[in-house]
Amino acid sequence: MTLTNEVKERLEEVINEWLLRFDEIAEAELEFLEKIGIEPKLETLLSYTAGVLDSLVGSFIHCLYDRGMTEEEDEEMIELMKRKIPELEIKFKAFLREKGDTGS
Image 1 (cartoon, rainbow, N blue to C red):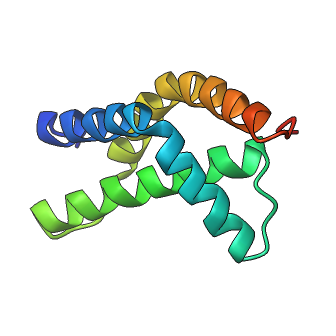
Image 2 (cartoon, one colour):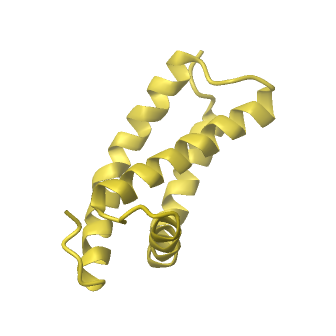
Image 3 (cartoon, rainbow, N blue to C red):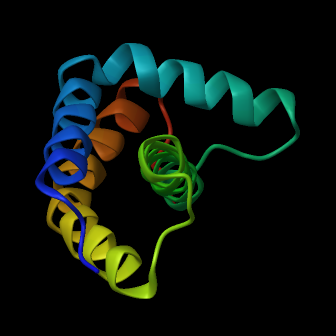
């Protein structure tokens, strides 16, 4: 079973909204990671973002269909996210530079 159009569209909407409100969301991520004792570097911010998006899709499927994601759905979600990760990475790098961090 592959992701339904509704789920794919919702994931893309969430990512696009994330990108539109990037600084606000990135700042919240940075503060959260610092509060739990994780240094907010580029890879941790990307990992955190990917985890949140994965959880959102899994929750959406659970709420809509009362089940977990299939392996095929998971693979399709990963491919959708991989297309957006480069854009998120560029934005995180710029964000971290503004904060005076190299992001490494």
